[in-house]
Length: 304
Image 1 (cartoon, rainbow, N blue to C red):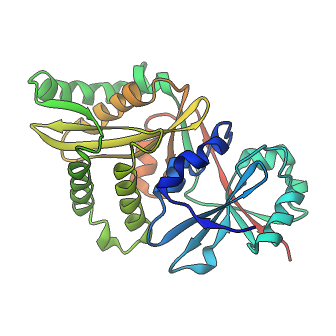
Image 2 (image 1 turned 90 degrees about the horizontal axis):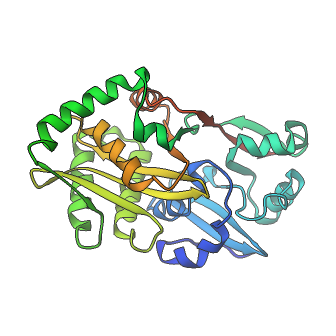
C-alpha cells in the first residue's frame, strides 16, 4: 500500500469516497483533511479497493503519526480489520475514532485488539440548524438581544455588507485572518495548533472554489470584520469551519453566526461546530448555543 501526500488539488479525485461518509466528527470532512495540509501536519492517503486510507505525519512530533478510520463501507473495517490494517501500514494507533464506531462494534470487541483512550478537547458539538436560525425561546434571549443591538447600530444604518468568499477577494480574506490572529496573539502563544489553524484557514480560502464549500465575509464600513467557511460532512450535516469575528464589536459574532446558518447551512438538518480544544472561552461559547448532542473522540492504540 503506497501512501501519497494529499493536497487541495486532489479534491475532485477523492470526493467519491466521501459521498456516503457517515462519521459525524469534523475531522472526516474532506475539506478539513485537505485544508489542514500544513508545514507541521501532513495528511497522506492510499486507495485500498473501495476505501481511502488516511494517515497523518507530523514534522516536529513524529510519535504522533496515526491513522484515522478508513473512508469507505463502514461494515468492512471491523476491529480485527483495523488491527490488520495498522500492522500492514506500520501505524500503531488510530486517532479521532468517533464513539459511534465503538458502540457499533462493542467496547469488548475493540479492546481485543486496541486500548481505548478518550481524546480530550476533541469532542464535537452538534446543533439543530433550525435552532440556530430561529433562536427561539428563553435560552436564546441573550443572543437575540445582542443581535438586535448589532442590527440597530450597523444594519439599520446600512453599514454592513455580506459577500461570498471568492478568488477575487481571497487576498483581503487572508489579510483579515492575519489581523484576527495578531489581535489574539496566536503566534506568541507558542502552540503549534494555532499556527496550523491559521495556515489551514488560508488554504481553505485560497482553494474554496475547488471545494464543495461555501464561505462568506461580513464587511463593516467596507472592512472585513468576520469570516466563515462551511462544508458538507454527512448527507444531513454540515460543518462550520474557521468562523472568525472581531470581538470588540458588540453583537457581531452572534449576528454573524446566525447569518452563517441561514446562508451557508440551511440545506443541512444539523450543524457541527467542531471541538472546543479544551479552551475555556470556546467551551463557554459553544455550550451557550445549546448543542443537542456531543460526538466524543477516542484514540485506539494497538495492543502489543
